[in-house]
Image 1: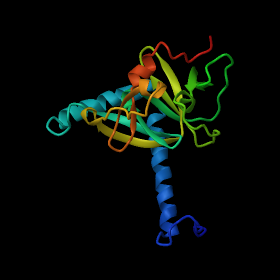
Image 2: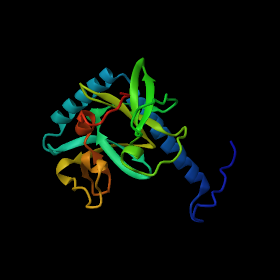
Image 3: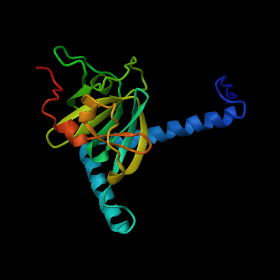
Length: 209
């Protein structure tokens, strides 16, 4: 096994070998997280129901009733989260087909297990900086009984528990479309999206006319 290369950006006190091990652990965590979400929506829904049942039985006096699970992810250097109940799958974005006559925020369509799913580019919808796509981009499939579409994300950051009553209101400078789909902001400045509103907004066309 080759020796780890020195990173010129690392402080002198940081051991390059330990830095490499940290990156390997993060990559392994990301792989395991993706494996957990890359399952059939029905199976994932069943797992969520069972997990909720177990929490309800084991944490009556420990977990607040207003605490809920979210998936945290990154877009254009900003931190976001959405309730896990709205997440069907997380997959690498291997390829997509652009669609003509669609809004600029519609990246295109993808084939997910035989289903044609539209993909929204939240960077465009939320007016964030837009960089070119890479092999590190991911597709977050959101679903409800009436709607299903994917959103482009940069990084999967893990699962967390959030107290609903601890969410802060949107900053005064956060206006426009992004504020319309905001559930709140955590103390760590993670923007929590309102998945129900995002999936149920009739004014958000996701397919060609």
